[in-house]
Image 1 (cartoon, one colour):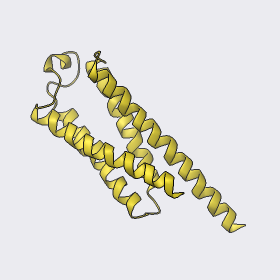
Image 2 (image 1 turned 90 degrees about the vertical axis):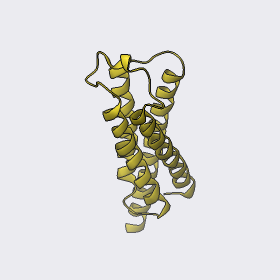
Image 3 (image 1 turned 135 degrees about the vertical axis):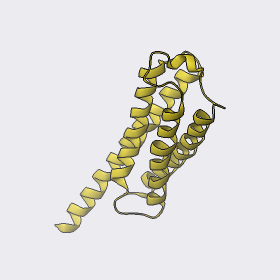
Image 4 (image 1 turned 30 degrees about the vertical axis):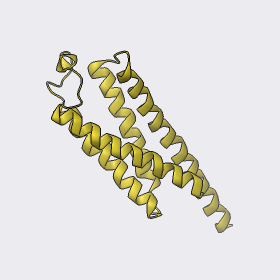
Length: 139
């Protein structure tokens, strides 16, 4: 994987880790949560489960992936793709649960889906580079 791709993945995953951890804490504590009335037609009665999912699953995965990328771990790309999927799935569940209210909430949903898509595209590009390099060296 080329250094610019790796650095970009580190930056995106580190940003995702910090903001997902902060967002998860905000949802759990209620300091940064939408009104609970938005949950009325969802399977959730509070933001505890979504907050834990954001904190542990998204934030945890992004944190681990960031460390793996910094350390040049040879198996960093598959969990990087899993992290991209985690934030995209989280946002899809959020839209299904509370909708996509106009304003900052919708903008953040779109922003984080875009980050997930960017991480996915960059990781797949890096994966292709690694495979091409390995194929070139073996021939």
